[in-house]
Amino acid sequence: MKISTKKKSDIIFTEIILIIMSFIFVLPLILALTMSLQPAQSVFSFPPKFFPTGFHWQNYLVAFRTVPFGRLLLNSTIVAIMVTIGKLITGTLAGYAFANFKFFGKNFGFSFLFATLFLPAELIMIVPLFSIMAKFGWVNTYWALTIPFMASATNTFILRQHFLMIPKELEDSAKIDGAGPMAYFIKILLPLSKSMIGGVSIINFIYAWNFYLWPLIITMEDRMKTVQVGVKMLIDAEGASNWGVIMAGTVSAVIPTLIVFFILQPLFVKSLTRSGIKG
Amino acid sequence: MKKWTPYLLLVPTFIIIVLFIYIPAGFSLNTSLYRVLPFGRGMQFIGIRNFTRLFTNADYIYSVKFTIVYVVITVSITILLSFLIATQLIKKVPGVRLFRTLIFAPYAVSPAIAGALWTFMLNPVVGHISYFFQRTFGIQVEWLTSKPHAFYAIVFASVWKILPFDMIFYIASIQNVPGEMLESARIEGAGVMQRTWKIIFPLVSPITFYLVIMNIVTTMFSSFAIIDVMTKGGPGQFTTNMIYRMYLDGFYFQKQGVASAQSIILIAVMIVVTLIYFKFGEQHVHYQ
Image: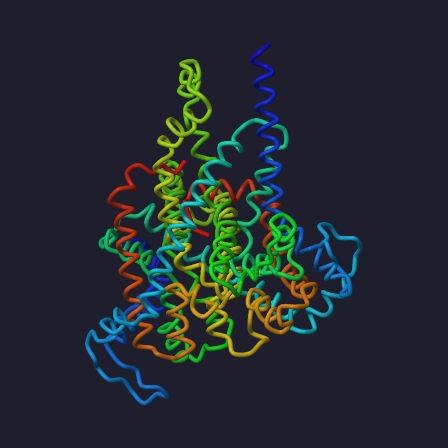
């Protein structure tokens, strides 16, 4: 009897802590939504409101007029999808090479790829990558925003790790049936890796959607920027005062990743912990 | 054909990393030894003078010191909090799945947006946190434009943004702690605090080590967007960390030689951090 009441109080204690924590972590998002749906005259209501009192979407109109948000959302979508697809292609191919083949120079190739972990993208972007893009004539293009990020070591290593776990017998029996290495790759290996590929895609999509420094440096015209930079443009344009409009832009920029995240969360958490990839 | 297959498979990846990682890194190393004259008037070889100048440059030294303080404080708070919350999130209580989903949410939010959200909440006129401080402590703070509050503001946003990542890993690894061990400790009279700090925390130390390294890298580099949106490195250069300093010098002031020297220093830091990780961490970390 004593134990069960103790357990009950434990559960209540945990429950209270978790409710408070969930509230703190989601609060900024709820407050942003509330503010974005507030009519302009009640933005400065005192005390500030916690939940929306109506559905005033005018702020969204203003945000989309002040900064070309529609175009920026399109750009971010293009960039995120292109980077995700590119990384899947390069990553599955290279992962397959490292997992299923023995070849001369394999260790060197692996170390060469591994060493890129020492070179965070931010360091490369600020000076030299810009010069290279300028030489290619890629400044202010989708090419510059996507192609340099279409391969990465972590991405390759996760897929390699996953391919290693697929039983070798499958490959052997495919060989006996006369399937070449590419037929095995496309018809057997990839279909067996669907859930891993799904998880990796979400991580890469969110990663590319959230690019900030690179679009800031490499795009010259507003219509080539991404939503992340759009939020900053909005803050600068509104002089950090018209918060309803700024939060309307912020909500528009964050909703796509939140939707992807909430729908596919179980898949995503599994691949994240399995891979140790960094967001 | 067969002999060439693995090489062909590697071609796309290697073209990209050579063209867009190794060649630019080589450029940086080269440029760091030159003074780059403005307006494309050429380059002048000056050896290691860019580096020696940096170490006597007060602004640069400040950015190094600021980075250290910012990284140490942000990473310690994040690790401690995420561990404690994870110990609660592994319990089988009603609604725990919902709580996990909600607490993970900031993972999907970009650093730039985290910066925008916190700028809004800390705004002295419309912000809810400013309002809270005003009502509870009777103080009105200009969070983003005064010292030392701008620093706290950046730490809040960074912790909020990084913590979910750590928590996902802590939940996965705390669940692997053998239940019998905790049960026998409980029977021997170990309290909740003792079980948490004397048994669970040591057992998950490999994950803690991994997370500390990952968090150091995130706070050093991805913090750029948070700082750019929230304070632009200000007030003055109060919140200018190393990556923001490098951005200012390399992009804003177009001092390419100096910025390249800074990038080489940061790459050296990265190599040290990664080597420490693989020297002491790798053999213990289990990817479930």
